[in-house]
Image (cartoon, rainbow, N blue to C red; front, side):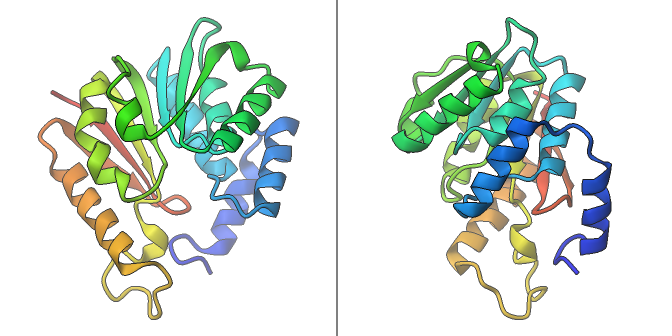
Amino acid sequence: MGLIVPAAVERYLAALNQQTDPVLLDIARAGRDEQLPLIDAEVGALLRLLARAVGARRILEIGTAVGYSGIWLAGALPADGLLLTLEHDEARARTARANFARAGLAERVSVMVGDARRTLEKVGGPFDIIFLDTDKPLYNVLLDRLVDLLRPGGLLLTDNVLWDGEVVPGYVAEPRRDPALTQMIAEYNHRLNTHPRLLTATVPLRDGVAISVKVA
């Protein structure tokens, strides 16, 4: 049984997902081999659905990795749409650019390399969707800037907010995560759910996805 969703339910949901394609499957396999912290296809399908639902034309992603989640997002964009995705590791950014090209999405995607804290100062909004899935200490640091970059009615989507269940005190008998990081995620969740400019709900899918709409 999974810590958040029972394993049998996760397998059932995975079997229902018909949105994957050969490029995504190949990237996911390579990611598992390299032990990269990629989202899975069920979270990818949620990202694509939400991007379609709001008619997204401009999307910002914090944490490109090798482009897997970005392909899910960019695949929902119109031909003249833009995914701007930020990655701090040059080698991963090169791999991501190659993967976007393999997926036929290179013209819709711009990969920027650098520290997100500095890069975001140069980025101009508004964005319809922002997907946050980067180093966890940055979540709290970046939150207010990301809210500023969203359009009214836009969505801030945050991955890993349940942190293998360890954000719930006492839920995991033998925690494996760094307690300092767990506390950071718990503080971020509190800020999301009390933020005066956001309305937030959390989906307990995989490691937890927070969905926040900008209301002011």
